[in-house]
Length: 577
Image (cartoon, rainbow, N blue to C red; front, side, top):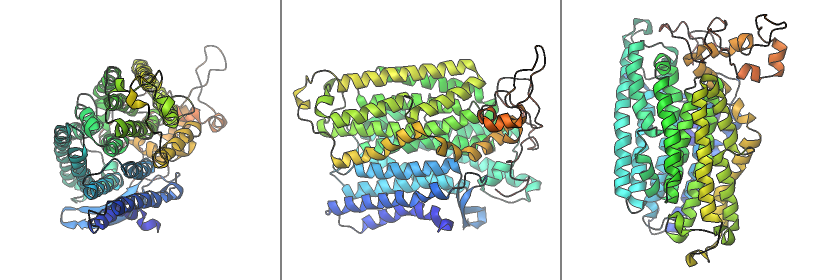
């Protein structure tokens, strides 16, 4: 069963889409039931990944490999690590929630709507599983078409403009990214040490040191494709329009999963394959991330449209994710991944919340609401919890991600951390302002007096998100354990001074026993009792385990040969991935 679990997860939504083709389009109830059952099965078959995944293993797991296009070296090559495993679970869960939330919202072309939603699910899952670059690109492009139609057909007033803008932005980034993939493909073949083979095998690229000049150009190509998807400033302008005009389920999937494609691309491809260029472009990424954090929060404060406010909040939150990632230290990258999951949970829930009142009132203007807590108390309670989650209230999921990002960024640069903290403060301002205007006060609009509270189906869409928000806030350790080896792999490539095997020797210096004496490294028993001494290495080591003279937390220049990049602790050089 485990040998084909990824294919089962991948093709379950696709099988459901083909099944819907056989159903009469007039039988809308049957179509809804089939789509919901298929989405639930898709989520159910992915749950074993959580239990079967081995956090101690540093290699990709559940690997499936078969020839696909042998003449060019392309393979059907699937596998996951802790990072992609968590994103797959997020995708299947949010996919089911999106399908369930559409039961009464979609009344036209119901059959086509659910087919596109299931096809979109397959594309997203394939991108997270693929370990062959060409296969990854195929699934990356497959996602475009269903989302284009979901916005263009079932969206609101300005839907065609938003759909075309989304499609063109993403397509431009994809074409440039493909050129970068081909550059790596031919460069790997050109090196005689590789035996002249042609391959799109990502795991081979992870172990190979490409020329620094090539890395520079390929990083820019990948940056354009991934930055548009995140989206980073100034490539974010498609996002508010797409979110505002997409149907509720489309906005949920867009915020919870599609935006993570960009950050996934940076972590899976840019950092481990192009480590030298990644270090060189840190200043650019940091500046754009900080602008996105502050700009997105300030524009969100000025919004009068409920859905548009949540959309701009995503620009700010994803800027924080990118800042933590490019701190290039273990705690920053781990916090970045955790915050990606948190953003999917909290912002996905916020778009569901907007969709529920829009379905009842058909307006998103914040001024049209007020006092909703009096007529919709359950709705108001869930909205409050998810508002606090988005803000980062302790005991809820947003806090742990923001805390780890601030820790990692603070080690790298205190000024960066100050800007990151300002975005968190502004986030609290616009979210609390939104909640106060919509939930509190008198009901001055008569149209709001008879609004119905959540139905059982609507509450069911929030239930798993509420559970995860509390679970990750109170006990994030199971998630962190599943990310350790994934983060170690990235760190070993892009910041080898933080390699785990060296941290116990010089990670956190203890005070000297006497005044004026040189500080000493922590004893092994100290590290064993205090994992933070190992995890939060404020004084990084070089590849030989010696303290670096710099305190910036950034990696030293690589030799470009790959000899300065240590393998994972439990692997030997040359072992297969």
